[in-house]
Image (cartoon, rainbow, N blue to C red; front, side, top):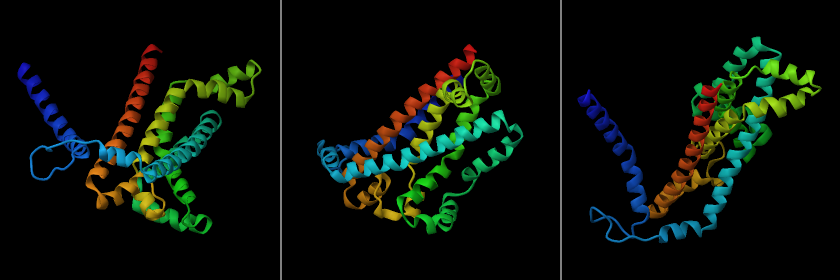
Length: 263
């Protein structure tokens, strides 16, 4: 038994080193004054981070990334919440059809999806940022649907709505005050997962509107040709943001599991 545990720990340790070594190397390079002759950098500096954070281009790109990540999440969240509520309460037989439609973007490759969206919406939106926003809204539908649907399965939505109506509440109040409140942990996890996915997405934005709308991903792609140190600082900053979002999402998912056990 001890030999098996030793083997398992060794495999996990090697895997962790394999995953973390590129991240550590990127961080070290981002604080190195220079690094090309020695095994470790001869000196360290934070000037690359200072240059990055003092550059208005970085903050503009951050603002654009947040905009094209938050707006699709809001649109997708409202659409999925309303659709699942109607289907769960009034049209349960249609749920399989809804699930099939929603999961299609997960199956379709990003390049094919981008070309299809360009053909469908180019006349209405051209190459504006709204084309990207609606593309992102479609792209995250599977993530949003699955998280919210799993939370709805833990409660009896139909009985809750009927009980609220018996107490004098309208369907809208029953939906917003009771149903949404009961599935809020699942909503938070779905929102954070969708946001982190969009914040790191590069394929769709590059194919749909190109590099003229510079987000963090596009800026990183251009920065790789300009300065390796600053691009490493940008990667480290980006990874820290995604890590923080993942940590919050993990804690929320643990909270959901705890609630399931208590019930």
